[in-house]
Length: 313
Ligand code: GDP
Ligand code: K
Ligand code: MG
Image (cartoon, rainbow, N blue to C red):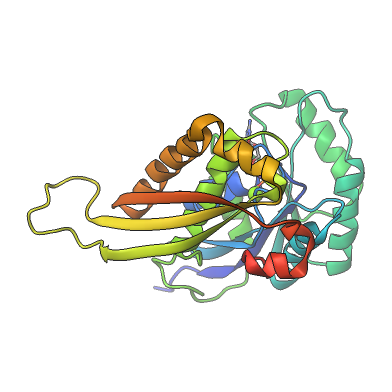
């Protein structure tokens, strides 16, 4: 009996900030490998998420949102996204329709589509957040986009609820070449545990702090001590085994931002630390001792050396 066709390849998630690219990556992989927040600049690097099924394997690449790039960090992020789009077999152009806005493509999306035109790759239109979109608006929205770009497929989804996400995977697969697995079947992501830990901490900063903070925050894990990760023979059974000691610094650009993150009597930093520790314990399956400090690195996001120092290169 002839075996069924196995397909594999790379697909990039490209779009404006906050349309739900990282939520979609997490929903596709079933794991939280990309942090999510209602703020732009949440995703700053490319993040690989591999989905392996009996019928094929897709390596998805989540990317920073593309928008008008001012400042060194923004330029870096847009570069990361466009480069990912160049390297893949297929582009998933993700859009949403934020409440209250007119039904239109908009200048931001149009700029991205112009860049994608030049690449000339098979490109899907993925309309996200259909859980918030009145059904009657979906078809007119599709028409608007189809007038702008020759999309290979149009797939409406809700990344948060999971609606349409399996179907999206299947349609992606149909457009990929026949071929063997690219990664081992148990490969999930290329993110190191250390990187995920720093991202989980940054997520709590974005969650708890005011609007000005996201743009100026970076997190560096300085100590990741696994010497007690193996549970002791007498340890009680439970979901968490062993202990990992982590020390990390939260970097901001100004003393005033440092004061916000620390909060009155250190309350804000304590909340950030408690919530980050819970998430990190679930991720690592171990008890975590987390020590956080806040440091000021003036204008790091505007200086190439600053970006390099904080891991964006
Ligand atoms: P990204 O910047 O494109 O990676 O977007 P995120 O994944 O960080 O999501 C931005 C915001 O949109 C977050 O508050 C998400 O919870 C929210 N979001 C993402 N997907 C959906 C969805 O399908 N429905 C709704 N209602 N919200 C979503
Ligand atoms: K976001
Ligand atoms: Mg993102």
